Image (cartoon, rainbow, N blue to C red; front, side, top):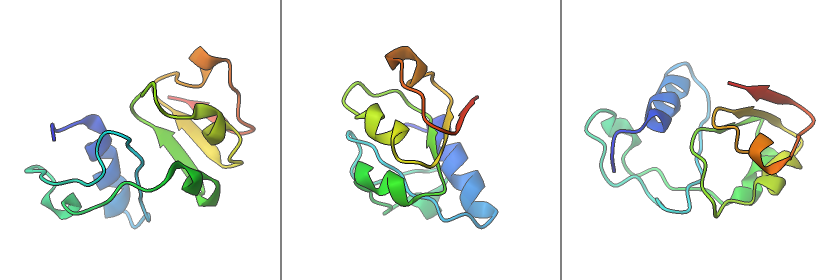
Length: 97
């Protein structure tokens, strides 16, 4: 696994005490991560879990993610990739970053 900005975000939020999960259809489990070894072993959660979160951060735009489900989840969405805007979706609470 390459050292992506998503890992930086995951680690920073974890360090300040946030409970962090991730969904990635391409990476089911973080197998290796030299920069953040404490993330090794974390598993991708089902996208349907988004409705149970306080917030969702879109840090990578994957074509095979149902962004409508995220938009309808009811939680705060922080979209760093314009993944929702490029698909004409608008959740009730959106921060474009």
